[in-house]
Amino acid sequence: EVQVVESGGGLVQPGGSLRLSCAASGFTFSNYGMNWARQAPGKGLEWISHITSSSDTIYYADSVKGRFTISRDNAKNSLILQMNGLSAEDTAVYYCVTPLIGTTTYWGQGTLVTVSS
Amino acid sequence: EIVMTQSPATLSVSPGERATLSCRASQSVSNNFAWYQQRPGQAPRLLIYAASTRATGIPARFSGSGSGTEFTLTISSLQSEDFAIYYCQQYNNWPRTFGRGTKVEIK
Image 1: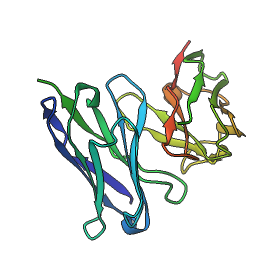
Image 2: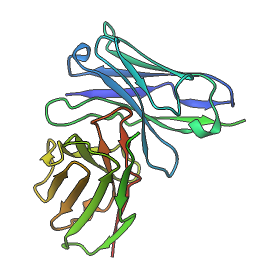
Image 3: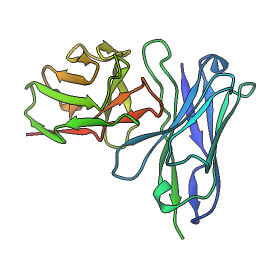
């Protein structure tokens, strides 16, 4: 069974940093690009970053470019999002998202990041 | 960036009725297009990909159509579990972009 489980969310002060992790299982992680998406409270979905299977190509949404860094460890089936320079606008549930595997995509349950003083 | 515009913002439908949701892309995305459903407190669930292919486990009452810039999601006979928010997404270009969502509510 494919599973992705996010962790690392919490309360952080404006300007602070946080590191999110996603543990993947049930599929050959090293074969697939991976994504992060987020959803601010009561708002819609926002894709924020993608990393290819071998980490050779990375994309970011303009809203996080220069502040967030996506990375992965294929030996540990792990996806990471390092978030720096956080502001209130980054308050959201952050999701780890697979691409299409077979005939569906898989989303974790999300981890809540709250940026507040 | 490709802007995805969904309409209507809210759709009031009685159980058993048909619902039609629309999404327009600001430029062609070919058929690299998906629909997601999100129930309160849950992660999004993929309904349709490649504009018209149902994802794993999605009932046949959900159907998608369109290509290029105009897309439609049809729910043929609404069930109680279908009242939710629906998002469209293009995956033809970076950045990937979502529409703002259509809330399907009980009439």
